[in-house]
Image (cartoon, rainbow, N blue to C red; front, side):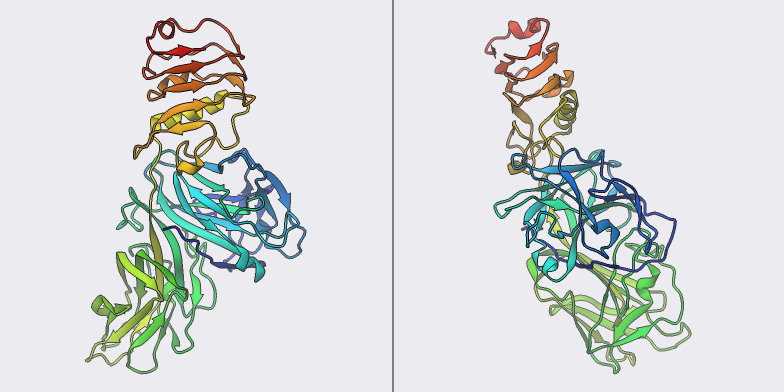
Length: 479
C-alpha cells in the first residue's frame, strides 16, 4: 500500500537553522530556477535543476514573502509522457535521504493543485495530493530513505487517473547518510518513508547544521505533560541513527510518578509495518543517586521492558513493528522508581516494499540508445520498465522480477541521431521497429541479439548494408 504523507511547511520560514557556509553532503535543487540561490535564513545554497531533467517548463510565482525555494517551480504539461524524471549521480550501495517539496501557488491560474504520483527508481512512492496543505497556506514535503542499487538515483513524477492539470515540483534535496544509519532495514527489499520525526518539548524545528544529515525534527508538545530541559551536554556521534544532540535537550514528562501516555504521531496510520525509534535521556544531574526506570508500551504491546535511562542517553528501536490507526506510546514507571518517565525524541518510518528494477545491462544499453538520439522521447529517463504503467514510450518488457527489454516500437516518432551500437547489448530483444524516422549512420552489428524476430528500419537516413549475420539469420524478418 502506498500512502501520501502530508507534513506542513510554512511559506515564510519553515524551520530555523543557524546561518552557515556549510552545506549538507548531497544536492539541494531549486526546481525551475535559473540561478543559484542562497537562503538568507539558513545559509544553504540551492542550485538550478538544469541538467538533472530534460523535460518540463520553468515558471515563477508572483506571491510576495515566499520562502525562496518556493518562488519557482518546474511543471510538466506534456500529456503523452508516462513520467518526468530527475536523475542524480550516486554511489552504488550508499544510503540517501530524498526530500521532495511542493508548493502550487496557482501557477497555472487554477484554484487547486493537481494530484499525481511520485516515483523513485522503479517503485511508485506515493500520491502527491497537496490540496489540504495549500488551502491552509502551507507547502508540502515528502521524505524517503533508500540505498542506491546502481550509480544513479531517479526521482520522477507521473500523471494518474486523478490528474487534471500539469504536475509540478518546487525542490528536491538528496542528502547522503552514513552507512550505519537505519541499518536494521533490509534496503535490498525496502525503503523507509518518513511518517514522523519529532523533538518532544522543543519550541523550534531542529535541522542543519545541528543535524548534519539535514533531517527535520519537528517540535511536538502535549498539553497534558510537562517540558523539562537537560542540565548537561551530550555527544551523540556513537548513537545508532546518529540523532542530533539538540534532540536530547528537551523532553516531556509528568509532574508525578505515574504513567506517561503520548499520542504520537497525531494522525491515523494505515495498517502496515513501521520502523520505530525512540530516544531517551535523563534530564537530571549525572550525580543523582536515584534511577529512572520504566517500560514502554506501544498500543498496548510491550515495546521494551525496564529501560534504565541515564544522562548518557539511550535509543530503543523496532525495525518491523505493526501499527494501525492511532498510535499510543505509554511509558510505565517501575514500582521502585521515584522519578517519572520521560521521552526526548522519536522517528517513525513506513516500510515500503521496493518494486524491483530493470536488468542493469539493459538500463545501460537504453541510456546509450537515448544519448544516440538527438530527441529521444521525453520520458526516456528513470527506470525503462518500472513501474510497469510508467515504462518508457515504445518500450515493452518481460514480466520477470528483474525485467528485460523485449520490444522497441519507435515507428514514426520523428527521431534523429544515430542507432547506438549498445543496442546489441539488449540480448532479450525480440522486436526492433524504427521505421519512418530520420535516423542516420550505419546499422550496428547485432549478433548477440539472437532472439530478434523483426527488424524494421525503413524510411530513415541509414547508410551501409544490413550486417551479414542478420541477413542470413533464419526466422528474422527485416524490412
